[in-house]
Amino acid sequence: MNPILPTLVTFFPLVGVVILFFIKEENKNALRWTALLTSLATFVISLVMLAQFDASNPDLQGLIKVNWITVAGWNITYAMGVDGLSILLVLLTTFLTPISILSTWSAIEDRVKDFMLFFLMLEVGMTGVFLALDLFLFYVFWEFTLVPMYFLIGIWGGPRRRYAAIKFFLYTMAGSILMLLAILWLGIYQGSFYLPELIAKGGIPADVQIWLFLAFAAAFAIKVPMWPLHSWLPDAHVEAPTAGSVILAGVLLKMGTYGFVRFNLPLFPQAAQQLAPTMGLLAVIGILYGAAVSYAQRDAKKLVAYSSVSHLGFVMLGLFALNPQGIQGGILQMINHGLSTGALFLLVGMIYERRHTRDMDAFGGLWRVMPVYAVLSLIVALSSMGLPGLNGFVGEFTILLGAFGSDSLQSQIGSGVLPSGVLAGLAAAGVILAAIYMLYMFQKLFLGPVDKEENKNLPDLNWREIVTLVPLLVFIFWIGLYPKPFFNLMAASVDQLVATLNAVAVAMP
Image (tube, rainbow, N blue to C red; front, side, top):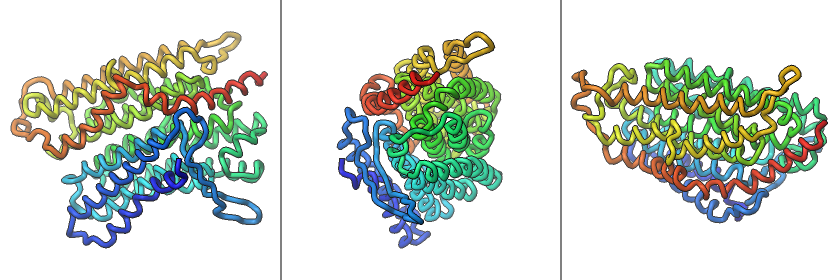
């Protein structure tokens, strides 16, 4: 792979940022088209990167490493590269960004220039997180994403936007400080910030690994978010503009799950083995809690927001199964969640533009009034609840398969052992609960009589809204019916990671 591609796909959105500076605020369509075409060009570059990606090679590809900052003998490198653990997440980022921008065509009318500037800068940060291989560089990209998302929520959000933006910023910043301390320890005592070198060197004492694991996990678990660190998420989602919610659910939350698989598992394998049962238990609590709280919501957007806690609990359960099935299922479910939940937020945003309310009691009978909208909503709802033939089923089935067969998830309880099958069985109940809250939402919005005058003449989806949703539906069906190409992209890198974890497990007393 050409080593310029990871850098190019990361920083190309800045071309659009520069062009936007020269377009007047009054020319709103030019601002929108510039941002959209820039994001589409970035997606094309990511497809070129995919075309040059060798799925049979488990190592990093397109690798570039140059000295960046040298202070008192310490070398911080500009290191970028891609492998099977990150390629799908880079593609998800560049895929969802133009879709999100297209969704703002009529929703964002004030300060359009500023909105597009922040959105393209956010894409730079997100892509950089998935491609950075130096811990210092990764931390820069990680923290940088806070700034544009803070303004996207705080300026263009709902009535409580400032509260939600500050809460989002403080939660994420608090966890990031602990991660920064762990990064400094690795740099000082391991003599490098370069991830492949740190993994190859190893040798971190088991008791130190636990603390470092927890420091990184604090930042990543907040971002996921794992229970009980999730309380910032519903506020951020509900107050964010639709495009912000799509990119927050679709990509930003995956930065947390990606952090676990990229850093926690290979850097601290002994700690990962020791803490896997605890992480699995927290993941299952998140699955059940998120599903139960989703059912209690009356705001459709808040229901979808809490469902993310449940769905990403499945991802965490798969990752800490520490076997190929679980980790591959977890990575695929990151993609599935980005597609399905991103589509759900788009759909909620479309009906909000028409009725300026998300209260499910304000609707009913929309199937008769907006049939195209209803059909697309049904497909996405079925995808989110894991119906066979759609993408959600493949990811959840693979995760449960990995969890049932995982030795790592078995917990020592007193003098006995809690089998991993117990956690997997409880997680499977989350699939049933997902069907309950998703069908409840569908019933409230679409079924029954049209008994409210405001709903009787609502316009159905226009061509732009359909174009926004169709690409997501294509992948929902593609992954559901033929997931093999997606598994192939990650298989070699996942097998290499699991081999490292297994070697540590054998060596552990």
